[in-house]
Length: 388
Image (tube, rainbow, N blue to C red; front, side, top):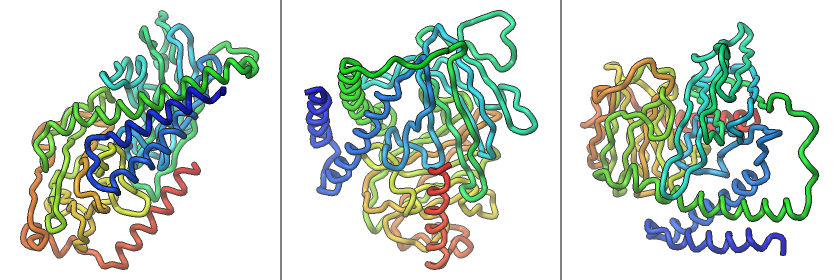
């Protein structure tokens, strides 16, 4: 059968899921099967979108195709490249907090992070007064101009990130890509081409699952539990992005207080992730907050409370039944490097001690109706963004 290689890969992928070392409960396994479904969808899309001569941008991840501790505040796009061709990226800048570009050599694998050959945000090129821009990527050439970026040997993928800080007001832009000088159209489909795509989709699926189950072991699980690192350049990421990471293990009667200065960076966001290394449900629950969404205390600090139980506070991050999970703070579009003083302080306390441990506890309170309105606004904002 034409689809047999992919069917075999799905069967093997199910074994990867059921054999994951972190599974302890039936809910862990159920979420693993849901993660598998999203990975199957994404792998088929990636295999069919492999067009380097007639490229186009596709969504790399979304609410139903999650991977790699996806940022709830970010729209991810990618396109495939050849390192010996020139590509033209045109569009119009939206009002998001950040718009960035990154060229990778190859893809993520279970044993390594791909080299980031080029990484920059939109401060690195000229944009018209109306927000329109044209950026070119290609082989090295003299006098290329300010909006030309050289593709290093092995360049294989262009990733674009649009990052939202205020979900309710910021609007996405428009972006497209084409290969310079391309004429004609892709060759017609044949049985051999389809067979190859199904085979590639199977390989993508297995690599995707194995890679991002190994990824936390490299960067998170070796850290002491219920701690977070000082800010550091994101591994394999953007030159203007720093992050602080950790993993938590909290009982129902415990809460984690994460205190961090409100940054002057255009984007600062905090999120929780499951042990499958994907974001928790950020549509129907407050499992992430940006600096614009959070309530800043009078001393200029953000105090987040991570807990299963509802503390009645504006900056509550819901564990949604996940006793264990991942923590990540990101700062983007930075104008300076961050140091320990910019990073978080973490304290685990008894849930009932929160009023005594939070210096501005009364000011941080919200009513159940106010919190319900927050969730309603999240649902509407995500729906608008995903259709944008």
